[in-house]
Image (cartoon, rainbow over all chains, first blue to last red; front, side):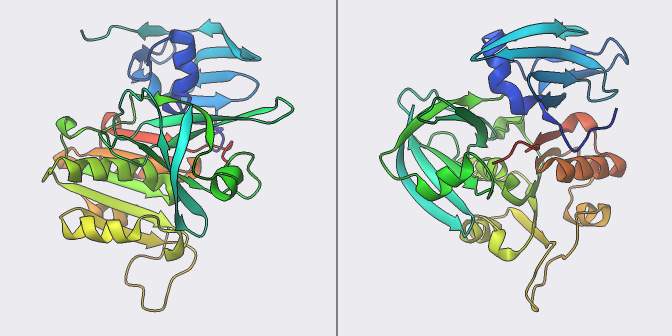
Amino acid sequence: MDASGLHIDGNGVAGTLEEIFTTEITVAERICQSCGSRAPIGAHRAYHGAGLVLRCPACGDLGARVGALGDHHHVLELRGTWVLARSP
Amino acid sequence: MGTVADVQDETPRARTIVLEVPGWPGHVAGMHVDIRLTAEDGYQAQRSYSIASPPGDGSVALTVERIDDGEVSPYLTDELQAGDTFELRGPIGGYFTWHVRDGGPLLLVGGGSGLVPLMAMVRHRQRENSSLDARLLLSAGSWEDVLYQDELAEVSRQGVGTHYTLTRQWAADWAGWTRRVDGEMLRAVGPPPAERPLVYVCGPTPFVEHVADLLVALGHEAGRVRTERFGPTGG
């Protein structure tokens, strides 16, 4: 898919992601279930609308869908392998 | 909450807002804050703004460019005064960040006010007295739009390579480039891909897209090119 004029970076929605994961998440990596590429969440494409969609920076496949209702965010879907290991 | 300590005009369209934020945990150059404004009827608008000040300043400076039909930026650039307070969340984002211990060489490519987080990196380098190879390429519509002009001239004298291209309007005696960023320009600015520079690109989405594609085509490692796009919901 090509909507390059519309998206920002995962880093740009770090505040919303921090609300959901209660920690800074943009340096964590995700392995795409479609193309197998591994990329930091901050390097993913982020699409803002009624909610938030994260897509693989290599192939554009879906990584996360987040719905918003008022002040609360509700994760609807996470896809691929999220590598959340953090160094001590 | 942030309290405005000072406001400084940077260009006819941009202003730096210096904030006192109680309990500020400190930040890394490249991070941003989310600002939320609430109208009397409860309507809320939230925007992200990059931090312009380096870590360790005590206060937090944001530089905001006015988007004429924006919901937030005209308030920040035209109406905000010292002593005002507003809701602020941050510092945010660990990915688009640079600290001297991350090393270099460093290549910073900014489009318009995309210079702001890159300037935090330059200021951090200066504050740490680092002699690390650092180069900046800034694309702006006209010279009048270029932020931090005096400070950029100063850091240029102190060893930061500063390069400019003006895309809309320039003086007859302008000696810099006058076109969109292209591969030839990036080659001239360097450092070459073989030196594996850490590259940070910030600006409007089409600008960042264009520059990131050029960098990868030149042979820079995609994993060492970090991007920050403004996106369509500016203002």
